[in-house]
Length: 453
Image (cartoon, rainbow, N blue to C red; front, side, top):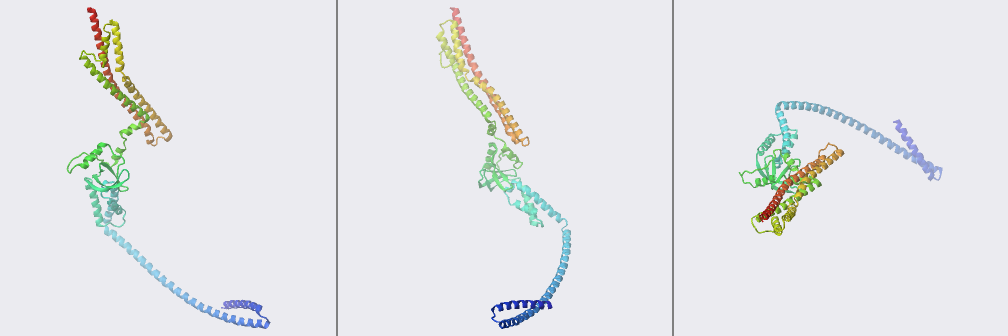
């Protein structure tokens, strides 16, 4: 208390001195200055007394507030102790109730665990099943049931059984339903989809694929061979009760995906590269030569047969030309006549055998080109091995395919050309043989006439 009083007196003196200094500047005489100081001192004393009274009043209020705060603290501590006792009691009661629940449930808890496990297994089954394309909402149900922590209800358990039973029964049905199908160009449209068990989906004569990860039905980007597509057309147009052949995939799409990845005939053809193109071009040229020679030789053979059946000389066939040469030189000596006939036969032989050796040449070149393609393909394969190693067989597949395909193309070109060469060569030899035979006959007849003369 004394400290606060001395502090207030000091402050008052300071203020008085400051005020006195300020009044000194305004006062004209010392008496005025003294009066001013006295008035200020009285004023400051009153102010200090007022301040002291206010401080004492506030001090009493602070004591009351402190007492109120201590009372509140005591009440809250008592409330905290009561809540702690209630919490401990609730914890004990909850533990007793959990134990009672476990005892009450017994094997029922194991049943619910089995339900969740079956729901999780069913989720994987349904996601990959084509039946889900017709019933897509069941995947979300089994997924939610497999992740739920609370106990499932009886209707939910019954629905799980129903979904499993639906999967079993629908796997043996052939049915159709409307669904959105994404075409190979990415356009989605509503279409009528045919489903054969869990094996295949069809629409508009095309094979479809069910994408379980996105729950969509899409056309295969590449369809299998035409004979399978024709079976799909027959199946979709069949009447109820009618039996039709249909290709199904028991692996649920795995075999079909491998089947459509197999290269077609034209893709195999293009795998041969430039050497394969040259080989097949030679085979095509050889085939055209064969066709031309076969037609020409067949026509010549018919004309020669007609010439043998008549005495009239027809100069439009090789035998008629031989007869014309004989008629023109029959009065000459036998040596000259023989030379003229040989000349005519040689001239006709050249035209008859024209192009036949070319077929034989192409038949010989075909396997050589195939061997060249094989060597080139193996070089490409070893270059891939040098650059990338043997870790990925796909990097070597191109060179190996070229090596094998060109070999096949060379054999495909050579084998038919050899057979075709034999055909046209036999026809040509037959015609030449007839010409030689008739020429010798004419010479024999002339020699017989001279011997009689």
